[in-house]
Length: 498
Image (tube, rainbow, N blue to C red; front, side, top):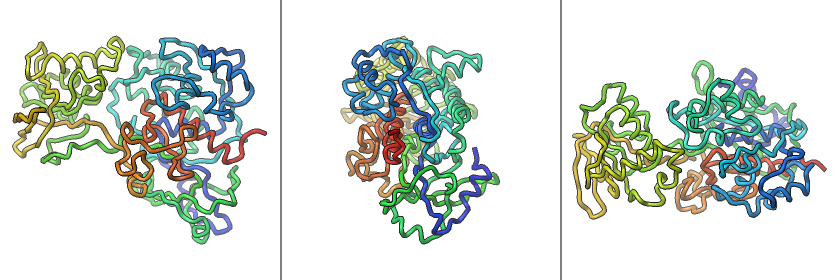
């Protein structure tokens, strides 16, 4: 989705000093977090559905105390107190259990929420994204099956399984393909009328705090027409955020833009930068960091007669690569640092019945190690090993926990050990915002430090973080963060009902 003519005009229309008005909210990232927040900021307000009974009796009792007050306007800390589940975020658990009341116990109870469109409560905002709505889901190989159940990938008030039924398709083992998910997110934006808030093919290069007084003295290129603003600028605002970047025009040119916002929401996810091992030779042309390289190699006739493919990592992307290679009869050497029995290994946390293909990979890792030959051809696993170096002759040296080294001739290497967010547009790459400000932001080990009930960054007021950046790594749980941010912004905008 390229910027339309109106958007193009807004980006390039200088404003006079008297017309200066910063945008209330800019959201950076148009994946599920950004889409969900846009929905809530567009005036879609959740209420308790009349006569609905939530299976959690304490939560039901709390909901009955204020049945006619929107969830957005209630005390999220009070409502979420005592809830337990697969997320560390109380608001994520709250919103998830309201939308999918007993899903973790195999239940199919309907959402207890109903949605009203209250246009007077909408907050003007803009969602900036590199891809079409759906974010990184457009970069994932389309046939890949999601880890989460398909119905957990859905966004508010448009169940994913209902959309899939319209396509006359069903869920495979309750799960969906990445292509389905990407299409669903695009459909959601159109169906809910959110597309006017989205500027795609847009890259943000800088976000910084500036003095409101200084920028009002300069002409600016603004995406917001002052005439249709529903937001009253807070006269006390002495600082605003300047967001710089560029968007690609229909002709493919890069047009710079500079916009100003009172609040900025970081929702960029973590798919941007694959993690490197940092070993000698990792930059050689046969060493890759994305699964797509293996698919490309298969097209170029890599196969059973080739030297083995080295796969490094013990997460789900590495497992996907092993399954793909196994399907194509490509020999694999699999190197990973953990023990096969390590409880932290993702395979030891997945139900076998629901994830049979990943269970198969785990079996291969257990039964076909270098120490003992097993029943699986064209595959050998090296638990508790790590890569020392890659050579120009395509020889890779690996080492075990006792320091013993082995060399193998390989056709290519896939280093699939996770990814990191690209926050290069923030001062100091966003490290100052992290829980540990001496380390890079990492969704699992070092997320951005946010208030658990507003998701506002503790180190920078007016800046919010959503999704994996704030430690919520599953689509079903990123939506609670959007609820928290929307609730906070509505309070700031005095758009709460009396």
